[in-house]
Image (cartoon, rainbow, N blue to C red; front, side, top):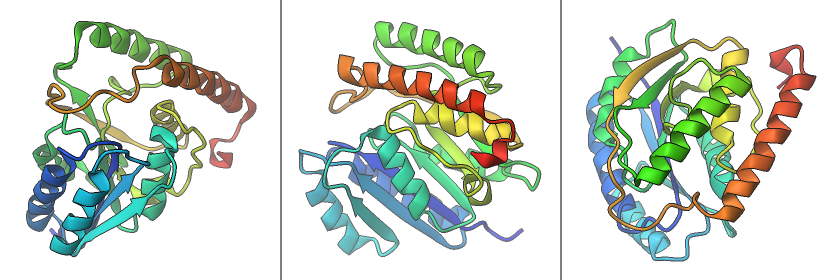
Length: 239
């Protein structure tokens, strides 16, 4: 079988100590498993030396494309930039903090058969502080029931998606609520999902950008707006 063409992107915010390892690592994976490919990093207004590291990498890796946001646009803003920039048939993204094993992309690609549109990861075990695990489980239970989402782990940002499916939906959220919006709109327009267990590791560098009151509040507001928006539409293709 012909190897697929793949766009990989990483949202990056103050990930100077991990982003280089991820980019070099994913290049090795794509060299083996993809035909045409590109690697994209969206730096969402980092205040550390992430941009310096990325500039060095761009001289080393010809398939690397860099997108620099002048100001922080939030997690949703970074994902929207990545989806818009991706040009190949399959689009894979995961976070720039190194909590997922990018080598496990090799598990996802063979599962993307002709009848599947999204291969979504499920964290085997969440390696985060206990309070984040509790909050994460409650959040996942909430969004699955309130939004009618069928997959097990909406919060697992380790996804391989057909670009043709992405082009059928519009994404509006700028916060972490975009993951709910993404999965829900893909599901409602008829995308077929397959799920696979992946490893999740503790954060070795930096701090979570989500767990502060301002971002939690903004995510909550966007979830309310999203729920109201989705109730307005009868035909999901109008998303």
